Length: 165
Image (cartoon, rainbow, N blue to C red):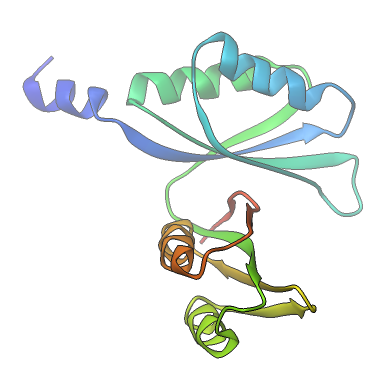
């Protein structure tokens, strides 16, 4: 093996994997168990039923070198409720965040920043302001970092959803 191939094989990369599964009990725990038993990390996991079918789509974001990613895909393909596994290379990724702020924070500043990240105010009560934003995961991470200066009471992220371009 030459040095380039060795470098390529050991380079840690972020991988988005879609898994189509039969929508039945215990599927999620079996897939999560596969990752945990082998010491693989799940950076993000979202699951939703596919409309008009008995299937669900799981979008898993993980990291590892080429050998680890290949092993994850092989092991996922061996699970009985799994119908299809896709390793995505060219995807549109989105993540949503909800952030709650105390009402004494400047609403107009929060609104302007939210709009810069495809977001807006969702709710205002006597005690709190709730905003949402949906954007690429890296932009959502940046957005939550910026918004920390407004002393959020709560931050909830959805996890990544992805679709091949």
